[in-house]
Image (cartoon, rainbow, N blue to C red; front, top):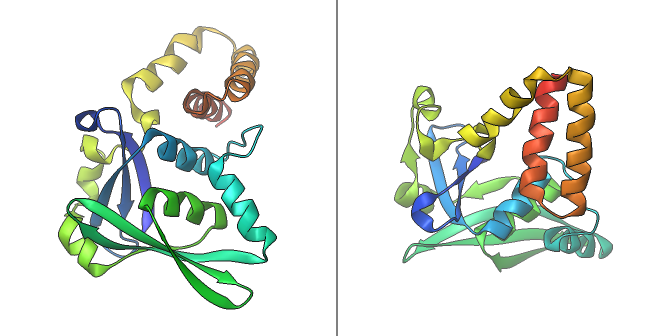
Length: 198
């Protein structure tokens, strides 16, 4: 599975929908996750390094300190609306499986660049068939908060300034957001910087 994106889920009280897509298929797997886990996944996807290790960074560091690594994760089951996952890691040549929430397993997998798998049973039960043409029109599959109207307004309002001045201002804001551990805002600012540079 590939990570298609994160989007806010208004029906879930501010939680996020993590959308996975089949690497060689057209099914999508939406999983509702908490704000903290969404932030942990988004930070790694956006290559934002917090000043201090977050929980999943700490877990990665501990696993690596024992000469171990995550081989892959498997979203293994769906029972009563709850997804179950397994983290499979190598401990000095010995394969060990660990039960985990999918959100935590995925946050670890991206830190180890490990593949994400889903059982056929889970995909059959919760997977959604999707035409590639419809993805951009469907709010369910919005790639992230970056595509929200709020995020799009910001660069437009600042476009009066010269790009160099705007870059300096945004880089200062990015540094401030990271210091204040407002990583959601930092991700949005980083996207604005990338737009200007790109």
